[in-house]
Length: 309
Length: 316
Image (cartoon, rainbow over the protein chains, first blue to last red):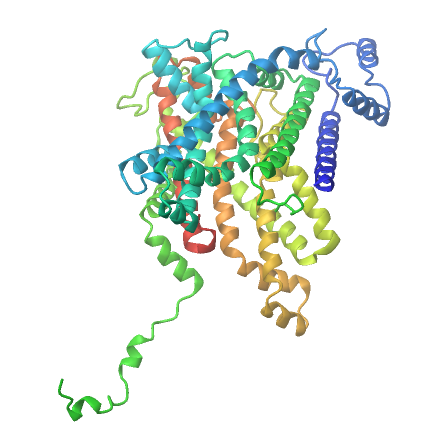
């Protein structure tokens, strides 16, 4: 157990290091540096700016400093907005994205799992066909299409919900649904097929045969086992939700980290782009490790020493 | 029951034997037969063919070009002259959607092809070599996998955009099509490499490979003539599944401003443009949106159908 944990953490740290090194290389592979852009600036001023941000140092020294700062959790300054740091941007905006992401996550899990369970229990009947047609179509609707459609119908046409901005619980609804749409559809399909598989197992017959009430059979014997593939999907699900915030926050003008990420792409604010990429990677790799560990706690059949394939 | 002697007569040389023998069919014929029985997959195949024709021929048949602006006819709703209406610059929406189909399909097919080539070579070498080479190659894939593909693609697209605008290209916010191809190709081969390696690992222990080795076939020949053809089913399925993913990613990139540069039109970009005037001109979102959804759906159905037809073991 401990050995596995150690190996898993070690590989996660290694992966994070690779991502950070690649982002660093990409940042420095951009010719001309971050300050040679819109207008020509005098040589002396450029030299001064480069000295200010230590861009005149040898590349290896810059790399060492960058890594050193990262270890201390400092992602550096924004090259575009004077006085702002990447850390400051994350602190101000990540909680908003987090709130949106967690709401979407909860919607996707609750709605997806219950739709999947219902479809499996009523397999081949109307309810099954209904949920499965919804989820088949749902897998093919990108979040930006769903988001704009919601906005058109719910706020422009029927004026039920505010179309943009942030602050009240009402503002969370539409972006969260747009973000949750695709994962909900996917989870519903995943739960259904896993549930059907479990329902045909012999231990289900045993449970029915010994006269357990139906709710007990369904909840304690079937759902508990059928939910495992959904937990494995938690890693990709979070990745999808986080990258989804890039567009959804833009559509609904939510002042979150995803919107800022896109703004920094427009603005060519490299340190922010790469700092945020590093931040997202660390966050997701860390979460994946957590999911791996949590998952062995939930299902004792999975041995930690087994190599993941 | 009375038993008559006739019941115990021999049946004569069996002529029924000949009827039982069916013509032997190859793996591909069998797969095609199974695919034909799948109505959703066939409908998708027909739709995709139709879409391909519309994308290739459509823009030539239209009296307008995708970049023709006509301010007198801006923001028209669907009418006879412009079946899907016009956008804010008076450009014909039908031609732009067909042109967008060209870009989306090109992105999909190029991604599938490069995925196929890189993934098969990489996974093939790792699987055949085994040992520490395999270990190193697959750890590399694992590390790439631990970061969401979209983040890699965004980083590469940012880098390629800067490189191409430095080289004196258009300095708009867009990227040229080649950069998108490259960014997608550099990332989307990862699942393919894993699948191919897994297939090769199980295939290479089989007797026909031993036989090939015994008669002195080179590793190259073993890989290309014996291993890859036998792993073709899963390979084709994986390549087909990568097409909608690539189309989706391109639409996503266009939507956040890392897609093709104006006046070129891709579906993601059309949808993103429509957002600014959503309240007044919702039809501008409707048609590219429907196009994206139906195309993704068709490729998903085709992928599922191919999986069932080519590789019944992968069936969920």
